[in-house]
Length: 351
Image 1 (cartoon, helix red, strand yellow):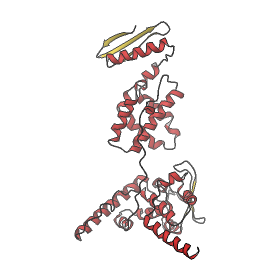
Image 2: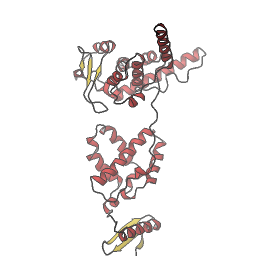
Image 3: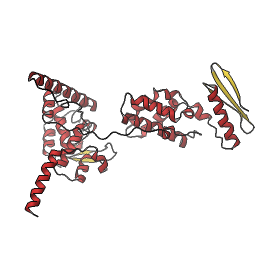
């Protein structure tokens, strides 16, 4: 028989068996203590009992600290993962033992986070927690653990953005920019479909003007990529001053993002003022919901509209599969209509 004792507002359950000796655990309520004792006694009787003492004495906060020190540094996106781990550490989950965390706790964490961050962010955080439980079981030898993340619904990744540049937006952003290089960076992004972080990390050793190429040694997908440089891209690079440190732009990814966002905001304000002065209704979508990464969408779509084959676009952008590429590609229907008309004319001339 199990014994139960109330101590300092909590309940201690003690189970004594010949094969185990005495094991105990403390709970907030007597009901939880009784449920745990019944489970242990049943497992002992069925000879399926597993000693969970280490799992019960290790909090998720302690485990994720070890995970951050041992596992995270091995990942390519270590810096980004650390920021997500910081959010997990500050949650109520971090104070719970690994053995006590259930699917309902993960669901509560998920729903709480979804109130303030995107589906994608919550999804990434749950992936980290899930991997932590797998590592704790398979590599750290913590017994009796079930992965609680496998018991809950994971937020779906939203469909790819379909934001394309509207007529005149690019020019207005150029005019509103207070950065010496933002205009050139924006146009370079549209010529190459490179990511913001890839552009920020460019140094002159990557650039081969003679071959018209730029070599990225390590990209988001972990592979080397050679980006072809158009004449306009070459002209942009050729007009840049050289920095002592060898960097092409000498700006961080964050600085580029901030400069772009501020330029878009100022451009929108100027546009609103012009519309009110002209007594016209402003377009609710013009110069809104636009970020730097949308330039990669725009560039990729332009490549297709110029007639480049899928394989060639994938070579430029670095996407591994067409499904991945499709999320970044949104063709303008009016351009497709013009192409259809042209194909029909060619077909009528050559039936």
